[in-house]
Picture 1 (cartoon, rainbow, N blue to C red):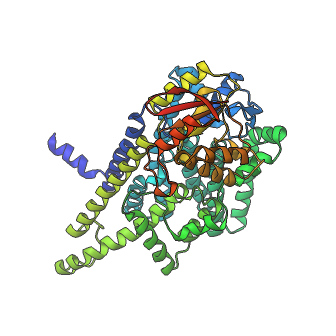
Picture 2: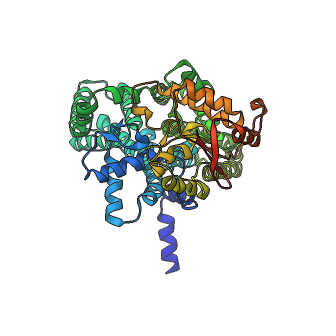
Picture 3: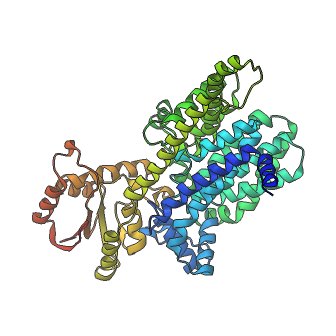
Length: 528
């Protein structure tokens, strides 16, 4: 019996065992992060409100969303807004719990989805497994996906990886079912998240250039593009009828397509690793290794993805960087094995981990990657979660203020990692005049300008009342209450004053009648 089990274990492909380990460890890191918090990480307030709007409207697509009382167009791809609402109705589990857990599940599914893609792109099982292992521990491949806003981002990324798998097969095989599956998963991607749809389209363009630059490839491309537009038409035609092109043009301008954004590629800070960026370094070496060997597919893919969306490039470059990093890692490990091979008289190319030195290096790197991934998750939990004092303050606001009240929310955080500012309108049903979320679909002003104004305003928490007042006048932000959250970041000396002195200034300012609410972290002032 024991010998039979032993033989079966020996028959197991080691690469599959390696892949299983990656999924188990990577899955634990992803799911443990969201389970340690009782609230969705970072963002998701906009989607939470849109899902509630959809449910309240009998699952008919609304023209606008009630988020932040701005009458913003309900233009967001609605697939997972629908599915999350249906799931909440069917399970009675609670919408916030679903938004908290669902994103992490799809980030786990993305690991085997990437393995499928890597397998067809690389055609080397060992490297495909190494690439998947590296992809698992690139923080950029999951950090923004396990957040509350990942309820649309995470499944879209999963669908995108599957789409690229079938797009590759579309141009390298002669099977009609590849056309069907490409249409299905491309449509699911488009109906889930706009930036991920752009990533898929940009990647497909590169695949066409390198693989489908012939009559047959062109015909397939036209069929897939036409039928994908037809399948997704119920959504985008509805948005066009109600809002015209404005929401799409506005959303298309949020990718930081400027000189400053493009030049970020020279920093090559694309993996979001904690401390030493070993994966990023291996990816950079792999990039130039490919160029030196005149293998241009991956370098061109990397460049096109970055140019198409500099803002979200760390996420969308993670598949390409994982493959590049795996290539250079294997080359380095094989170099370490050569002296041992020469001593043993072997001439064949062994497995990259056949030598003691190569195994030692890989174990060291694995430990560093796991530590980096877990550290990023811990940082997210500690710095981007709505706390109990926040929720208590939100409850007080719902009971004790008018539904027409407008609030200036100051937390000292950057706008895209400021959960209080985003969740405030969703959980209080009050207006937050400085919240940036939602303006991606509003073509009245530049989203980059809105972000910049928000960053400047949040610095006022460390300064004086005059800073708040002058910026409010400049940006035409009329508000009835000031919501100040005790910042958890150390005060920079350039601001010239502490958080306590700013509060003291507000308490004597003639712009406020009284301090109407206070707990350990939050102070709320009423404006005269």
